[in-house]
Length: 115
Image 1 (tube, helix red, strand yellow):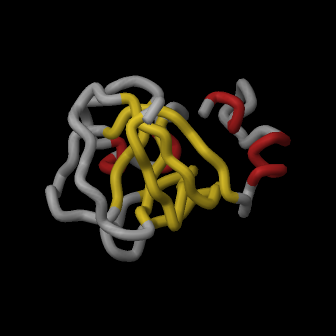
Image 2 (cartoon, helix red, strand yellow; image 1 turned 60 degrees about the horizontal axis):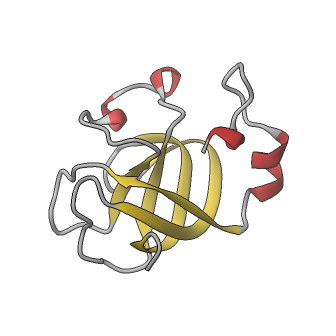
């Protein structure tokens, strides 16, 4: 996830290059607000707070909003997962949840890493 940002928090040339393409990212699923949902937060480390309750300026650069292709059973906390989806970058507010994000994977699927 770090390769998507420059040191000043702006998007890197690599992020611009990957925008709109299908990519894979590895990380941890954040604890979920709703059990029956088609989205989650992917983080490079386990997180305990809701990053979408913050503003764009407070965005944590180690998380990605993931909108799944179809609902999947959530991964247990601390389980390393591999997510594949289409990369979207730039500030956006999710119309369903109202969450603000700077980086998203859409049409995504995931599995346990190494599976």
